Amino acid sequence: MTKKLLLAAASLLTVAAAGPNYVRPATPPSAAGPFTSAPAAPVTAAEPDRAWWRLYQDPVLDRLVADALAANTDLRVAIANLDKARASLREARSDRLPQTNIGAGATYGRSPEGQRAPGAKREDWSFDAGLSVGYEVDLFGRVSRAVEAARGDAQAAEAARDAVKVAIVAETARAYADASSAAERLEVAERTLGLLDQTVTLTGKRFEAGRTSRLDVSRASALREQQRATLSPLRAQRDAALFRLATLTGRAPADLPADVGQRKTTLRLDRPIPVGDGRGLLARRPDVREAERRLAAETARIGVATADLYPRISLGGSIGSTGPSLGDMFGGGLLRWLVGPLLSWNFPNQEAGRAKIAQAKASTQAALASFDGTVLGALQETETALSAYAHELDRREALREAANQAQIAANISRAQLREGRADFLIVLDAERTSAAADADLAESDARVANAQVDLFRALGGGWQVEAAKVAIR
Image 1: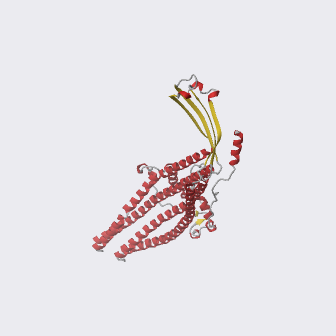
Image 2: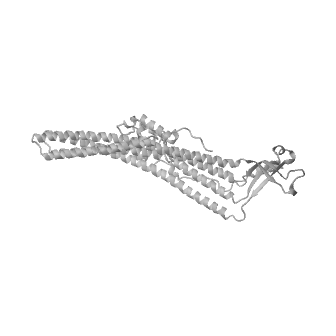
């Protein structure tokens, strides 16, 4: 009889699972092609470098990224969430296995006179022990759909962890670039301040010689102090970037290595950036993968809710014994056993079950909309980053030429002032223009570095470099 029940259960397992089978949604064909903003930027169609920050060839940055991937607190949270999702998947898979229960007890009591066996004490101890085994026949796929949903959740959590890695790598590179560019802008400001100090000294000597007025000395001094006032905000920006680096790498500000703040030049690339195409982008970005896996999980939950409308069949058996003493429990006459199927079915009132199906379908539609929005957002973010990078490079070239011309004009005006052939107001204006042009160029260098980081982050690489992950199946 037991053999027949097992064969019947095996045949029932071949029944199709309830609910729709998941099909990955298609993306628009145009999304798979080249980026529309790529021709305007110095980029190539090659696939992006997974360890893109190494393109800057800065060992300090490489070490900071490694530290961030090892100790960042946000990443630790994402890893814990992944461990939780994997544990939930193991819990769902456990429903495929037989459920066992062992029970034992001892009681002391008094039996009714009519139920007392001949020669037995009316008041005595009673011992009981038993083993029960139950196995749910997944007739309508409730268990398999639940496992499918849990697997999707775990894979989504894995993708969410990878998305955190992308953000951490990008923000670490950005903070390092901000600290470096602030240091470079500070040097430019200090160099300009030195030139203005020379102008003030020269003006003072001309005033003492009676060749200029006190007004010119005051104007030169005012311009110098205005330039001096720009130094403190730049120092504050550099310190803030270093403090961000400490937090990103899991350190207190006082524990940041001293060499992190020694770079005095903005991060620069000497080669075009490989960006690939839309198809590679959507396959690479972990937020797109996370949204797709969430959609798969929600689709599977429709099957879980649908299977609850149908009967749930379990196969079970138990064996046990009851006796007046431990030694008497294992006699053949005291053993009891049973085996057989168990059917449970919430019928005819199934309104609650159908409401759960409607909820699952609505959640699936929301997940589909979220997936579509994530795909469009990834494309929009990348196109925006490409466009911003290209236009900032054009702006920097114009500012570089402006700074060169302003420097030439300032040099000429100083020479003419020494020769007495130029009005002092012309010199001050030339100095002011040159200082502003140098500051604008240094600020544009910083914006270019940030635009590069934005582009690398939009491309979605960086998460693959960390230790190899365990695939979730």
